Image (cartoon, rainbow, N blue to C red; front, top):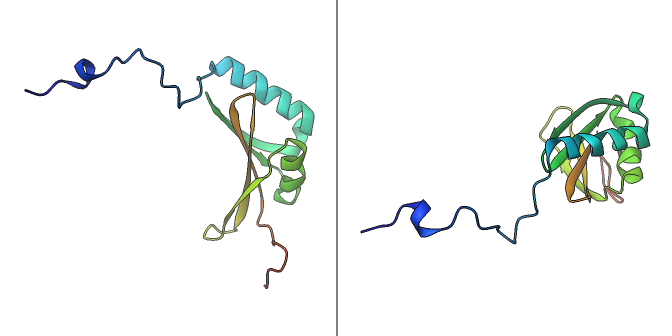
Length: 111
């Protein structure tokens, strides 16, 4: 006889490996402070979930500067998208923050 998932684990136990989830209001407050820090007019679009914020600048060429201002220092290059882009990632107050930017050209890259 097999136990149902509810019987085999306590669904109310906190998983210590996962960070606590913030309320959406908390994340929106954080997003407002990010927009204030970078200058709202520089951002075309943002998305927010309980543990993630993504900013897309009006001008992707401005993205890396915005990312650095916010402390996002981990780049991920997306070559298959048209146009390609780099997504810079960091963490602030337990929330993953991403900023889209134009595709970077790492040192030594050949066109």
